[in-house]
View 1 (cartoon, rainbow, N blue to C red):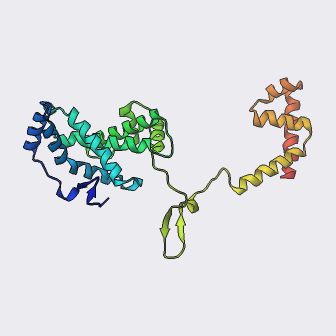
View 2 (cartoon, rainbow, N blue to C red; view 1 turned 90 degrees about the vertical axis):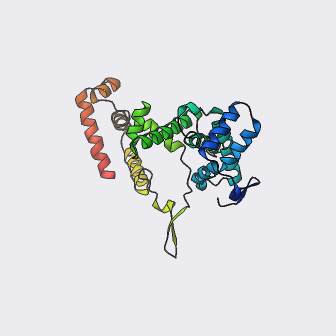
Length: 255
């Protein structure tokens, strides 16, 4: 990110344009002056450099990001409306950011649907708008309300475009053994204790008679009431209740 020459451009010698010069060049550009267009682009390349600093952690080539950022710069120049009464940089920065994000999105190793990406980037734009309006970081609920979407849908979309992190990424190092993300990950669903309980449950069920197993299956795995079970197997609800209690008592002996 600290290269002096990017794509053949010596960034240490880039010109700086005054606001008056920018306005003059924009007027000439609207009149079709190609030399003014080239001078305007050269005079705003520092804007691209400042934007690509935000994307230092993506592992992309600085040259590639710079070229993509220039595409955004040119699009902003071609679509900028001087009657809006805003600085060109205010209009151009979001365009450059959007172009770089699209590039990173399309070159991501993890494929995310276009609709999900669009939702995520719309949420990021809304977030920027709210920050500019209030000066504070908006809560996800505020962003969702502004977008007229469910909060969980916005969260899901933003998580979908988050950069993947290796489980073997070190998060702490005390000079000896490093602590990795994988060391901090815990799966409460698939832990050894749950596997043991599941095996014990299967063994306990295997010790029951066929009818008792069938009743427990209908009651606790298929969620049926005792009355529904009684109707299905052709006995009374009282018998189902008695058989169910007996089966559970037998299972407890084996657990």
